[in-house]
Each structure stands twice: as structure tokens, then as C-alpha cells.
Image 1 (cartoon, rainbow, N blue to C red):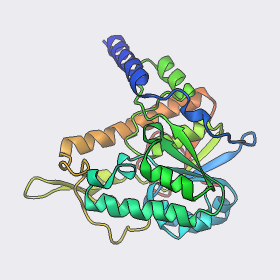
Image 2: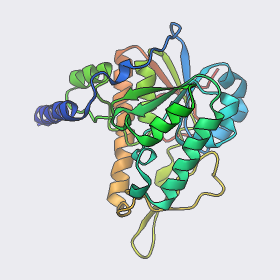
Image 3: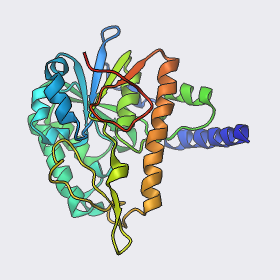
Length: 289
């Protein structure tokens, strides 16, 4: 039965790759790395504040990768990250396709990237959004930012097949959280030691359902931990996500980390979760030192 499921998932993934993946997506930016160099991924969970207080000198001395709305915080210019990963489709959609919340967030994100980035930085962007008007405008106005396009095509099936596709950059574990492409891209760049900070992933304890049967999630970040409120998880402007859809999304994220660990182990790459608090159970815990 497991064999048949893997066979089916492999065949579906092959079809997805042929229809969705860009086969030269990851060969557009040359990045030179020192052998065995480390990279630190800064996720946006609340515990990142504790990690910054504890490890700031170490963080400043290493290559760093940040995600999502980090640029809208003072920490961005202090850290001066080498890499920045964006994933969510709403970052690249036209305003007419988005709710007011996403429009305001996008304006802040791209405005800050344009103004604040005064050092060379690689911006990881899903290959399917390569022609995004927002992205093109940013790249035309800031020459410090170099794009690196990656495939977000979900790859599932036999382990050997998934590992081969991951190595080629044809796809990745289902990218239901930005940490997944952040890790996959760090691996593809050749880093042998990858540290994660601020990956709380504590959403399960932040779920509630209103009397109107609307599921809410309080998605706290290091920059809004005390101000954030429970909100609907929206599919842009169509409808809110239902509870089983929210939990399934979380399931796929945690499952994806185990798939990434398997792939990293195969390539003799070490991924360490150095977060002060984290629900991720896939990666070895180790302090950043």
C-alpha cells in the first residue's frame, strides 16, 4: 500500500514539475561561498527577541537569512542580512486581488526594501512570480538587491526521487511556511551548517473559534508579540480558512521539516534549531556559539 501511495505521489509530482517548475530558475545569480561556511536563519517568532539579546555578537559575525516583514523592523539594518526570502503569493499580487490588510503590508515591505537595503543582498523569490510588477519595480530602483528565483513546486513520493528533485531545484517539500524555502535555499547554496533562530511555531496554542464558527489564529511575531490579535486566516479576499484547513496547513509544515532533515542528512548537512522556544521536533537542538 505504501509503495502504491509513493508511486502515485511520484507520478503526480513529475506532472507538477513539468507544468510548474522553471528548469533554469536557480542558475540566475552567482553566489560564492567559503567552504563549510555557516548561515543563520532568523525567523520572526516571538522568541527571536530573546535570541537577539543572547546572541547578537555571534549573529552579527555570521551570514544571515531573514524572511517576510523583517525589513519593516529596526533589526534589519542592524543585522544587514545577506539573504532575504519571500514566499507568500500576496506579496506579488496586484492590489485588485488583495484585501486592504495585504495591500498596506505589501506597500510597507517593498518601500522598506527599496530604501533600507544599502548593501549587497540576495532576494529569494518564487520563480512563478518572476514577472511581478512589484518585484520588477523594486529591482529597477535598488541595484544592491539581486534576485534568486526558486521553484515552490511540491514534490512528494519515493525518497530517492524527492532527494533528486530537491538537489536539482525542481521543487521542495510543500512550502506552507517560509522557513521551508529558507532552509531549502540554504542547502542549495552549499552551506554545511544551518542554524535557526526565532522559529517558535506555537500556532496550535493560539487557535480559537468564535460563536459565529470563524476560526482565528493569533500569529505572534517578535515585533508585535504584545499587540497582535487573533485574526482570520484569509485566502486573499475570497473567504477565511476553515479549522481543518488551518490544522492541515500546520501539519504539512511540520511534516516538511522531517523531509528536509532527511534530505540534509543525505547531503551531510547539519541543521540546528537554536531557537529559545520552538515546537519544531525535526532538527537537533543546539545553542548558537
